[in-house]
Amino acid sequence: MSSSININQLVRKNVRELTPYQSARRIGGKGNVWLNANEYPTAPHFELTQQTLNRYPEPQPEQVINRYAAYAGVQSSQLIVSRGADEGIELLMRAFCEPGQDSILYCPPTYGMYLVSAQTLGIDYKAIAQTDDWQLDLTAIERNLETVKLIYICSPNNPTGNLLNQNDIRTLLDMAAGKALVIVDEAYIEFSIDNSVVSWLEQYPHLVILRTLSKAFGLAGLRCGFTIANTPVIEALQKVIAPYPLAVPVADIASQALSPENIKTMQLQVLNLNQQKAHFIDELNRLEQVESIYPSFANYILVKFKNCKMLFEYMWNHGIILRDQSKQPSLAGCVRISIGTPAECHAVIEAIKHFAIKEC
Ligand SMILES: *Cc1c(COP(=O)(O)O)cnc(C)c1O
Image 1 (tube, protein in one colour):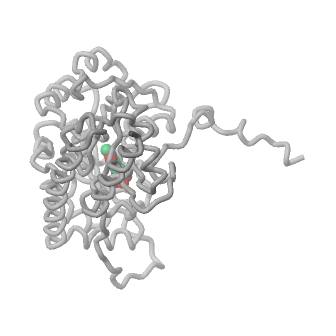
Image 2 (cartoon, helix red, strand yellow):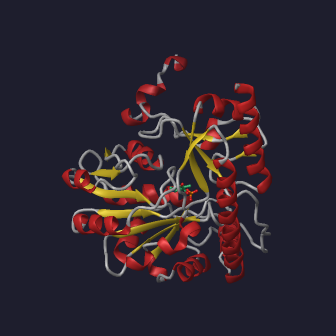
Image 3 (cartoon, helix red, strand yellow):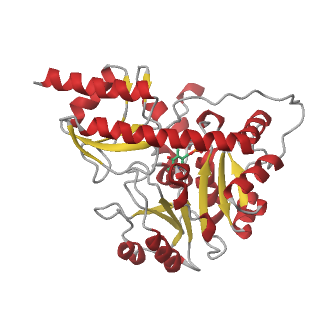
């Protein structure tokens, strides 16, 4: 009897229709060169300090908050820490969007989680494609603002790697004033830190900025991200966040990663990675298979290849796992490659050369 119960019919309708987010780890692959998730290629070393685990953690660990606030140049009250920036994306929807009534707006090609979170929560969404040069289509956005409570933009944008024009972001903020929050996802901002809009917070009560320790800090496995905004926004998010979002060991390591000394180390590694990116681009540019390499302000590059599908599969079969972007709007033939160690970048170059020989 019980085996005939169809659990699926009990699942919420919008959840029944979901396909889980195709994260890099979920897609799988077998190999030794992993350049598909924009992770930092080497692991910073930390040790847990003496901690007891019989008590619940601090809901918002004070040292993590204070150190990140100092690092970002904001007040501690303008910050909430969560289980990755991904949780911040969702907290905003939970606090600001009435399902079936309000909507979010996002601008593809871009990061996939804005859509996934909206679909999971049953919140309507408007996808307003970027212009041909991957900037905001402000006219189309303005025409579609009705019912929109949250506008997600990403700069540097994942997967294209470019920055959004700051004047356009200001125009968008003016357009949205009193109607919607503008969320600028700065997951990769350390790789071009001068382009942060964090100093605009005073001017715009409806500006929100997402940050993470997953990329430049090299701590994707830690799951720690930040939402920065003016205090009224943060207070709304505090109401909907889980009671203890960061485990004690996570807060312990996050706090160490944000010491002045370790921030300096991170900044040096960013300089190093940016140099390496320039070198990698030079090498790629010499290869026949490469059609274009788009300017990147992050720790990955988007590359358009001739024979993209075959090349991607050749790399995959040879244990070099990249991220296929060819199904995203306007990205036909494009692959995203995270900048790895010098040895990993070299392996990519060599494999493309071998692919080319095999092709002829
Ligand atoms: C990686 C990434 C995130 C998520 O960061 P986590 O802190 O690991 O959840 C958010 N936004 C963009 C654009 C990303 O690429």
